[in-house]
Image (cartoon, rainbow, N blue to C red):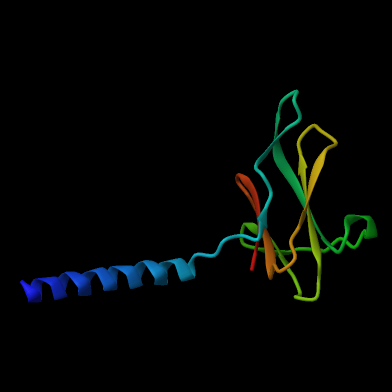
Length: 117
């Protein structure tokens, strides 16, 4: 019975370590644009994204690099980036602070944006 308990404990510990190591590889975005926006009159899809170095009012828009099917903005740790999420057929947009992100990426089908550490 004792060896069976040791085997169960060893199995549990190895399973726990496996889960912990998998979670270390999975990164959570610092910010991501919502895929849709509702203004009370309808639901609008995300269509455009802009990344700025600092507040949007400073108009320091960053230019992305194009890699495969993605646009990638590589960010510096000294930056205080802002991400602007624009939606179809409406003048409204969402501004997100992406401080701490190392890069932001935009995919096209469907349009998705996330900024990662």
